[in-house]
Every structure is written in structure tokens, then in C-alpha cells.
Amino acid sequence: MTAIGIFGGTFDPIHVGHLRTATELLEQLGLAEVRFVPCRVPPHDKSPTASAEVRLCMLHAALDDVPGFIIDERELRRAGPSYSVDTVESMRSEFPDRPLAWIVGMDAFATLATWHRWEDLLGLTHIIVVHRPGADVPGTGALGALLDERRVHDAAELDRSPAGGILLHAVTQLDVSSTDIRDMIGRGVSPRYLVTEPVVDIIAATGCYDHKERAIR
Image (cartoon, rainbow, N blue to C red; front, side):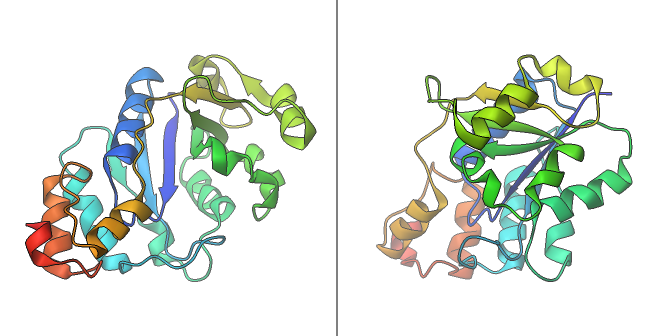
């Protein structure tokens, strides 16, 4: 069985950087699908600017016609902080033998030891660490030791067991962030071509980022 990719985040808003990363992982690693899991209450970050309903609407607008992309609403339906380990435990109960692969950026992976019950994660899922080509890889400390023990070098190795491996994979990371997009809109600058056109329309219709209508259109 091929692995299911799990891509969590606030997606506030979802943008082309998210889409490009997911596309490359789906195609290059041969994942069965990529599940986008919008977070309700980020454990480490401030609350999202747009409501859960609007963020979900933007996800559907961006993803519904894309083969291999799935929207998973379990964190939006769950009260309290959206801990990754709780999400993977829930998914593991649905797919007891299927390889699962949690997708994180190198910056988030560097904070792994601060995550809630982080020691339990690799018993439930693989981890795919996406990074820029040529990026530094942790070689010392707790993460260096973890990589020495758990790192795999081929996506095919993820399909051989349900969990436990760490794969580092370089992707074309576009210099785009949801924070920058929200700031642009607040200044009256159009986000066109940084988010898909249907998402532009939702931002304009809802005013979720205090945009200036003229700039958005």
C-alpha cells in the first residue's frame, strides 16, 4: 500500500506555495493522496485571522477539482488545541495498516521536541520533511540523533511499514507565506497569482483580511 500524505496547517489562506509543495510530493514520492488538514486551534501560533468556515471554503475552492488532493476536516470538528499526535491517532484508527506520512517544513521539524507527545509520533506515522535544495540538515543534538536512527533515503521505504521513518525531500519552495499575503491585503495590495482565482473571490466577498475592495479586484 502506498503512503497517504498528511499536510496540516491553518491555511489562512491556502496559497500557491502549499499547492506546489503538495503537488511535488504527490508526484515525486508516489503518494496515494495528500490530505489537507486545516487546524482549528494552533498549539504554538496565534489564532487564525479568517474563521474556520471561511478557511474551509477557500480550501474547497482551491482543491476540489485537483486529483489526489483531499480535505480532511477532523481538526475543525475537534475541540481544543489541534495537536498533530491526536490527528494521527484518529487517522490511524481509520487506516490501521496503511502507511501514513506527516508533512512538515524544515523549520517546523526543528521544533519537533517541543510538540505535544512528540515521542509518540513516529509510532503512528512517518515524517516527510520538506526543505529547500541545499538546506542545512540537523546533524547534532536530539534531532541529529533521531535522523541517524530513523532516516530513510527512498520514498519506497515509506510504503514498507505503516510508520517510523523520516524522509528528507527537497522541493521547489516558493517565497510565499500566508502572513505576507494577509499583510498585503491589509495594505490594499492584490494577492492575485499568489492564491488561486477562486480564493481571491472568496477573500473579496468575505472581507476576511480587511481588504480594500479595489485592490482585490
